[in-house]
Image (cartoon, rainbow, N blue to C red; front, side, top):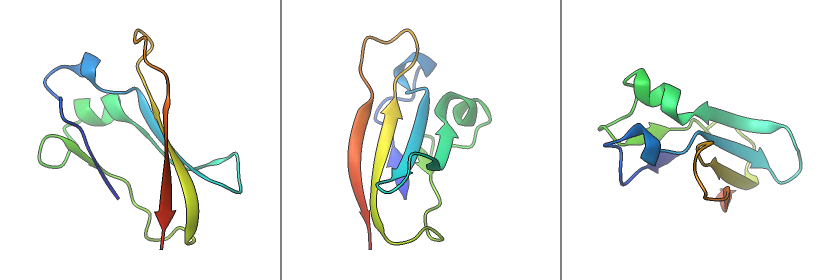
Amino acid sequence: MNITFEDTKTLAALPEQIILYSEKSTAPARSVLVKGTYNQGAFKNGNTIELPVRDLPRGNYFLHVVPGKDSDQKTDKIRIVLE
C-alpha cells in the first residue's frame, strides 16, 4: 500500500505516525514514523511511503494518521479493505 503526501516541503506538514490496525485487534499490524522515514530519505518519489501489506490476512483494517504534537488536527481514521 502506498501513502502519498501532497506537501512534503516542510517537516511540520507531515503527520507524526501512520498506524494500521486490524479491525479484530488493538495491536498495530504495521506502523511507520513518518518524520523519521522522511529524514532518512526513504520516501519513494519524494512524497510516498510504502507500507507492506502483502503478508497480512485479507480483511478490514483501519489506518490511523497521527498528526504532529504541535498540530491542532485530530487523528484521521481511514477504513481499508485488503482483498
